[in-house]
Image 1 (cartoon, helix red, strand yellow):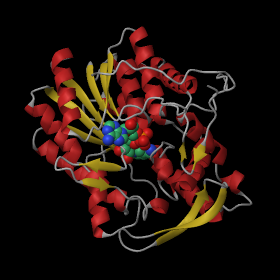
Image 2 (cartoon, helix red, strand yellow; image 1 turned 45 degrees about the vertical axis):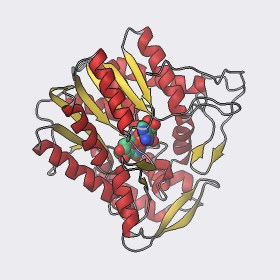
Image 3 (cartoon, protein in one colour; image 1 turned 120 degrees about the vertical axis):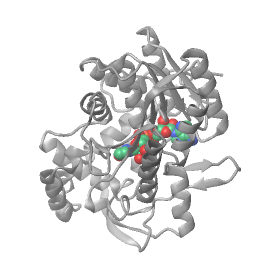
Length: 390
Ligand code: NAD
């Protein structure tokens, strides 16, 4: 099969197995060239197939030599459909890790469900006994709770409509987008999906099953971002969910868990490209951070988290006890330049003030496209198998 990108709105409907492998290989190479850090040898990554979760799994395996269990929610190839990028990434990660003598097993299913939690615990008991670190990196559009209720998250404001510049991803033009306010039910549903409840459920399930090593570290990810995106992110429905996540971390700590939040930089991932207004902010931010030589991708962010924070006895945290690897994005000079560019960016000067090419590059890379050493005209087998945990 010759696989070309088929982009629809903010998603690419196809993924390239060789390109995804190249994406994973490059991230592994990056981590292999960093010093080693010991953060425990048995690591569970929930949401391990793309974005920050995949980079975390790579840091655990190649930065700490850890055995990793990954929880993913991905689809294999079927008929004329390619597999999802997360499927190919995971296949590539497992293949490379195993060739390098590292334990890597993956469970494919709904991490919100009791069934997947039980399956994970069974595997930990069988293969590890206990676990040293848990990374919670889910970004999901919906969640079905134990009583069968399905909640869908929304990306809306919480009070009044908000209008701002945005990048029309179909035409690459600067346009305006207006986001409606969410209903109270929608705010609650977003909290159910992206808040801390399921993270706490995982931690309680692991503890009750006695599979947590003493002082096992659990980390979940968040975003705060610029004042430009406050109405849609920090003060919006997703921000409300993240507030709930912070409260969960606090409660977990009160219960004796070693639970930490890391606030990460905005990057192009399958989840972030779905948030209106954010793509233009990201393109402007990329321009500014690249010009100032402080730009990082997911693997650089996670590697810095491993090296500069998690491996330290008393990592630097903000007033609310969160690790801030968004420090470079939030640096005053970076934000001031972003504000300046944001005010003046329009269709005539878009290339000057926004790194739209960098945005798209990252976007295509997520699905395994755009790597100069991959032959996209070659006939490839889309049916890549993963030896999933049954
Ligand atoms: P992503 O879409 O790249 O990854 C999400 C992962 O969750 C994937 O592996 C996916 O397969 C998995 N997943 C989704 N639903 C699942 C389910 N029901 N069961 C099992 N797995 C499931 O997202 P990301 O951007 O890497 O986000 C991960 C975390 O990082 C989120 O908490 C997000 O808020 C946070 N974060 C993201 C950014 C950003 O700009 N992308 C910035 C800061 C923090």
